[in-house]
Length: 246
Image 1: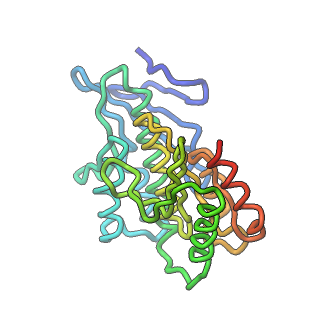
Image 2 (image 1 turned 60 degrees about the vertical axis):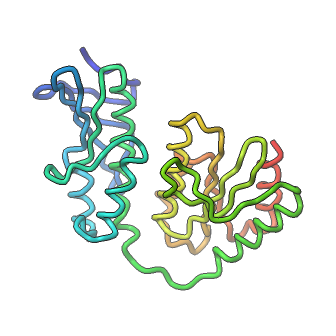
């Protein structure tokens, strides 16, 4: 029986299962493809090692400590795992959960493929300090409690730079690197998975940001909002205050 996926997914019969071309893309604009293989009463969904291969091609080192730590932590947040023997991302599920597993593996594969973008050290910047100062001002203006450097996932590994404790909480992550933008996307996905009403907003530097424009555009789909800072310093406090109050 063919998986029940939306029309934006191209599903092709493959040996023992299905090859699924998703609408999402890697940094080079190739579609993210996952495989669903039937095994007994279960399905195993994996990316066939594509993300790790692309990471290596882009100059990233899949065996580096940074990448190994990421692989040991991030897939588990979304209920998947890294298979070190096959060098691939995978998730086991029953037929009812197959659609969700496809989405999960595809999302993590895309995120892993972006790690190479974060390999260069950043130059010193006052961007984060400026945003944190602005968030303190917003807390004073709105009278809403703000907590800083707060874990916002069940495993306590995804840290919000600021959490406004409103009736509908608002987590703000200062995306001063590709990795922090990835963490904002993961925090949003994990909140949706748990049914958590917390909103996740990523603030990037805007003009002069080291994050490629394509990644910032993609983040709009995996956060509640991704907002630029430079050039909007006067407007952002009002925008955040409105979000907190509603």
